[in-house]
Length: 204
Image (cartoon, one colour):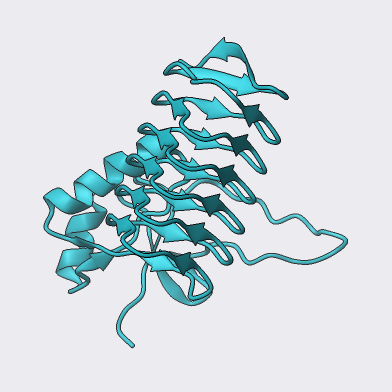
């Protein structure tokens, strides 16, 4: 096995972290440029650093969709190969299309002829039905259900156990709250919550 690097944020200096005793368990913290004895990178020019160290494959896991896309573009422009991380329990049905830098967690289903664009994160136990289209850098939380022919545009976040009925479009940069049921199209830059879902404010 070759070198393994952790990249935590595109800033020059790691965040200051205080160790606090916890009742239930203890956690590991980055120290002295390492995390669990593995080299830790925290540099704006991280692609150059990786290339110098003969690392040419990366997976960008930043939770914020737009930040994730920016770092993906930085990797691509530097000639790094973006790879996928798909759990073996994932059910991929026939003729689904997968892009690059995709993360799919356990027990998720990607339906027949569904399309998952670059930079999408699909969390545990999510159902994406037939002919759905998930555009770039969307984040889907655990237990979400998308019926057939749903379009999720760029940079959206769909929170835990939301349900979206068939033939719905979620406009770009929108946030769907946990447990929300979407029965009509959502305009771009909207935050929607409730059953049925209602827009409560714009996302800036």
